[in-house]
Image (cartoon, rainbow, N blue to C red; front, side, top):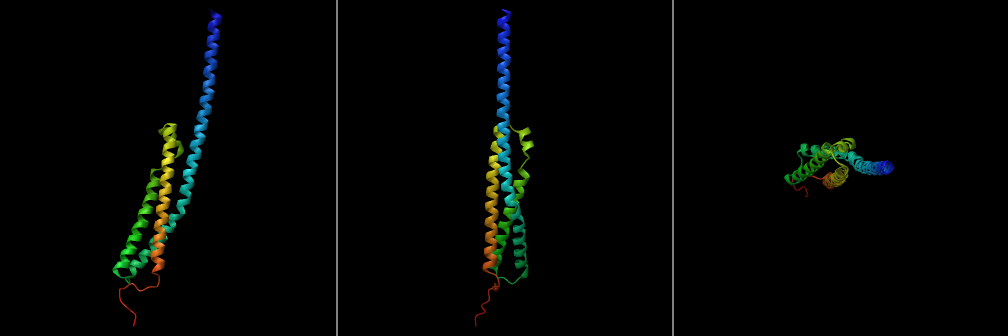
Length: 159
């Protein structure tokens, strides 16, 4: 009887240790996947950061154009709309950064599946921010370049 009990105890311990090893391997794989997803998300962030400087440059150019007072109302409206689009894109980036947490924080706050879900969501979100930033920069460039050197006072100077 004791022998059977010892065998059962041994099998129970062996099974528990085996599950522990499997759980550890699964946890390590999960952590590696989280790290890769986090790094991918941050690569998106790193692509977008230089665009913030470009937005600031376009906003300065637009502000200079608006301050010059040499433009008709339609062109001023175009400039103002472009400025606001740049501002919205910049705000979206700041909001994204404020809502992004470190991987360690995510791991303490969420279970493994929720961490991955959050990282996928943040990766999609930074891609949207990037697209909005690039579109706002391209729009500002088009307005500024298409009208560079033109007289926008609304007066007809052809004689």
